Image 1 (cartoon, protein in one colour):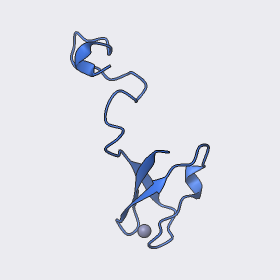
Image 2 (image 1 turned 45 degrees about the vertical axis):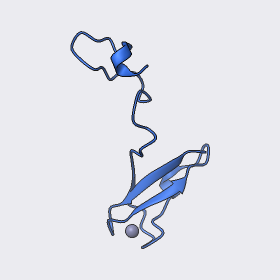
Image 3 (image 1 turned 90 degrees about the vertical axis):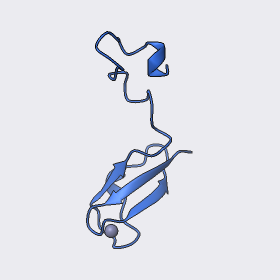
Length: 70
Ligand SMILES: [Zn+2]
């Protein structure tokens, strides 16, 4: 199960949560202050190539070249 990091926009705390499949992110609250104003931040696991293939490494790249790490 992936672990995501969330940022509470209320108290600025970063916390980690195990992401359950199908979990509604709107139900996530900050463990520190209980605010609903949390935003997922990119964790170190989700660095490359998992964002729908719209990213490319350069103007001549279609998004699937070896430099993209695909
Ligand atoms: Zn908070």
